[in-house]
Amino acid sequence: MSTKLMIAMEDSVIMIESSKTGWKKVRESLKGTHPQCVTFDPNNPNHAYCGTLGGGLWKTDDSGQSWDSIGKDTMSSSDVMSVSVSSLERGGGGKNDNNGFNTVYAGTEPSAFYRSDDEGETWNRMNSLNDLKSSSSWSFPPRPWTSHVRWIESDKTKPGYVYAAIEAGALVQSHDGGRTWIDRVQGGPYDTHTLATHKKVPGRLYSAAGDGYFESYDYGQNWKRLVAGFSDYDYLFSLAVDSGNPQTVIVSASQWPAKAYSLEDAESVVYRKTSSSPVKDTDDNNSNDKEEWKLASDGLPKPTGTLISVLAANPRIAGTFYAANNRGIFCSPDSGSSWKMLDGMQWPKEYLSQHPWDLAVIEDA
Image (cartoon, rainbow, N blue to C red; front, side, top):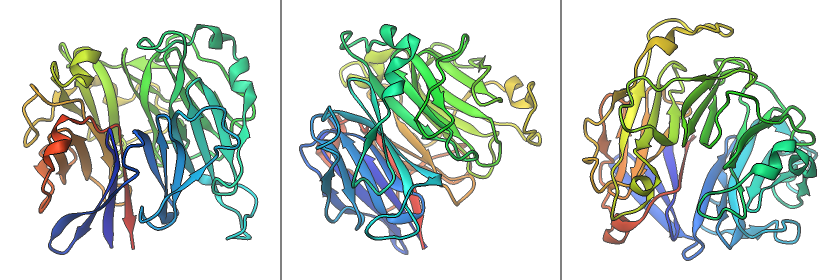
């Protein structure tokens, strides 16, 4: 079994794979497309998708050796900001599989939501997203005349449940695969950058947002803002949850956007929160609420000069996290307590000035 990492850099996608002698960069592809988001198909390790700024959506069936442009005849925008493959929901059959494919979702700028049930051969726009009452107020601060679907999370416990984070203005959800939508709720996150669900805790949502960290234990009907311990670093970008312990969460944080994304002002950290208490699926007063966030900096680069990290958990190896930033790619084998740069990896000089936008991990048998 090997671990594959796919990182959306500013100007290309890089594929990295573990081996008996360490880690190696397998290939760099889609150069010049300005990748924004990447994801593996959880049931097909060689299949992956990449959304780009201006270059549309791309798909590979051979771990990035070759890529095909998809969706350009259907999607009204070539700015694809988010993509997600459901591990539970399957559509009708396609040319390669009579039993159906995992449903794929994609989001664009301006905000639009698309669904494919045949591995991206055809796409349907889910127009009801734009009928939500809150849509009139959606606005992305750097480009206030527009907004985009920043993150799509396919629920890991409920087929058909899917969440869309609009940057900025709303976290909304659908219970029927995007056909109809439920608008944002009062007290929920406003500017979610990353959202996660966990297969061990139905109903629990984790949100890393520009307005802090939020959790819900009832599929997003109610939310708690949990920011104790953040100090001045409460602008959040990425998060990951331990695949073996849903009580252990890490987030990347900065003081404000310029320090997160601008190399001249860069200053960022990683925080960790955990609890040894047993998980209760419907516990409104989850014991993890009482745990404060603590810096998880052992082995990571110093905050100054480090662009805000993208984070991911190994889906099959409990306690293993990965972090990518302009200084390199790091692994934690102890649930975020300590970090080390990947063995054998030489980080090219041109990446030192680039901000990774997304990170995906999969185990390949």
